[in-house]
Length: 76
Image (cartoon, rainbow, N blue to C red; front, top):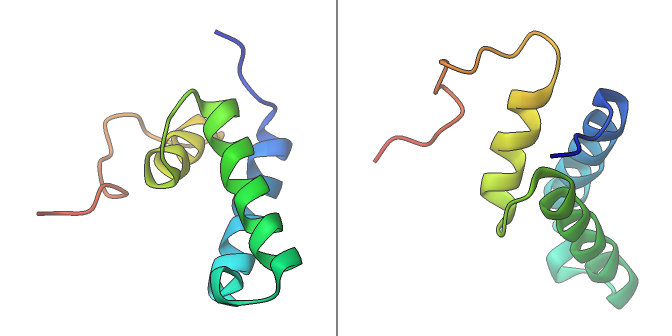
């Protein structure tokens, strides 16, 4: 499986978090489209189907991540 460069993952995570923090999903059509594009790209580069899984997978692929560390997984 191809893996995205850590710099690309970091940039995508930051873009998503910024757009999400700014509530882009409730913003202009352009803001909503940008959030959708970043979310889709994160899913594609991590081989996942939803943004929550994509964010977890992306963070686990970054240098210094500990695969056995499940602190990023929401508790039930």
